[in-house]
Length: 433
Image (cartoon, rainbow, N blue to C red; front, side, top):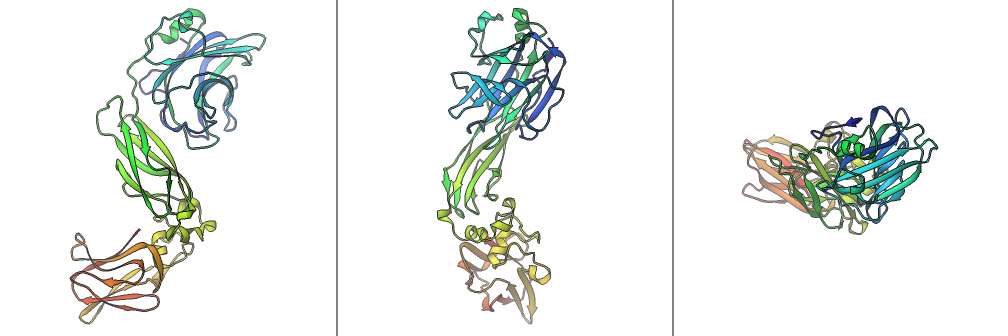
């Protein structure tokens, strides 16, 4: 066999990023005449967008640039109706199978290449379930699922580029293993690549996201992770939620939970990503949601007035647009411009001072500020462990005293003063949607 990689560890696992979009493997000699190539492929999540392609490109160039995908070969292409086995010129299909390839399943792809002296090179392709059985002869494979004549590999190809094309949509994911290239053609070459295929392949968790298709900015939606670990790898499957793309970062109630909530700070289309890791292999699923402008209230409306001057990845409630260590949510709660960094005393949100036998807690929150989506709470603790509210406001900055230690409240235009009996105590401001 000219080239082979064992199953333990494989060549690459996980996301194939689009720039550089893959890896290159060089053969020890130029591959010419008739040869056989086989590879096990696991098509994971993220293939729902048209034009996305998993590429195995045979090339006679010495290296791969960061530009267009080189060479001619094969892969799986989504033409808008489904993911199909295809012969590829770069990332463009020139012939493809009639049937749609299944996802979340190991497939054995067999390719026969013929490099002809006249330049009319040929590729024939078959795809089977990885556990399929058949004789190790060309006739046992049946008619090719894809056949194309007209490639031009020159005197032959001496490298294989493996990656993904992603002209739109989120990154798609595929795994491959047991890549083999024969030293000769005919049944002897086919026997080389199919002999003793490893059956101990580690399969990553199968993961999907259960969520509504639309949301309203500032309103939480429920997310449920659907996870199955088909090879039952020992140890728990860990999860991580985050925002793959969107006009801002979504806020997750629990970034590691099987169930959680997500809140979208501004209107737009978001792609939420869930990563599942079984300790051996990581996989992920994406879910696209549209947070429509019709439901915008509160923080979303406020942030959109500054959006032209703030990068998309710094518009979320827990982001810091100005770099002054004040989260955007706190700037919104105080009526500040999120683009302007606060310095010195202006950065203070809460201050505690002694006045005779009293403690005075001052909050720099303007009077009459309309915040329909916020709840403010001033909390007190004697030990930094147990916290109790002493004042709160919902929908506005009109605070009312609460609890056993309810303070007397006085107001200025830009500040709020809470007066309580002097005692050893800690205070903090909690702002939530």
